[in-house]
Amino acid sequence: MGSADYEFQTVWRVAGTAEEVAAILGDTTTLPLWWPSVYLGVEPAPDAGNRQSGIPRPVRLHTKGWLPYTLRWTLTVTEPVTSRGFAITAAGDLNGTGRWTFEQDGPETVVTYDWRVSAAKPLLRRLSWLLKPAFAANHRWAMARGQESLALELARRRHGNDGGTTGARAVPPPTFRWLGRKP
Image (cartoon, rainbow, N blue to C red; front, side):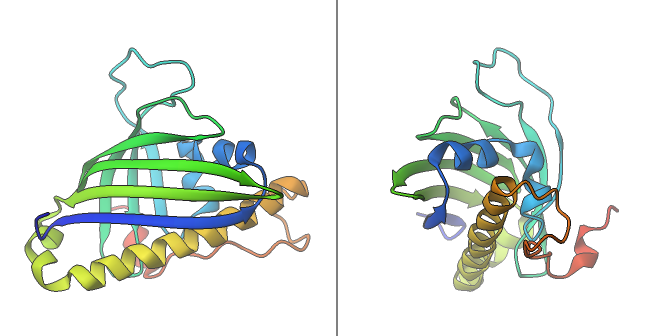
């Protein structure tokens, strides 16, 4: 594994069904709505066509973690989204693959995300040999916000909360909000 290559496994436990989790994580167009601390923007990407049923259209993402840099990449779901999980590819500032798996455990779902990527953004590529621990901590921070935001989104949907102030906590906002501004 090169200095710009990363392998992460993240495990979450959230209250909800695997079907509910798949519906949220599999709808890539809504990521900035419920996980705004990481997903700053999403737009449809050119579609290569020949998509299978259950596979959403590729999207271009503008993402960030806690550190003050952003990433632009295309997320392509590569297999149908099911209550057992799905796989993705990343192309752009990050290149690689990811796999979400969902396992029902009573009233909770165990969510596992395996992410194998190579940093292609010049800043990350050049500094990975030195700052790999900081970049890995940045990923862990982003995924912790994801677990928190997913739990809140599951509760909001379960209780019919449309984003108002009926008791649901707000999702964590992005750090360094100025990075989310369009150039």
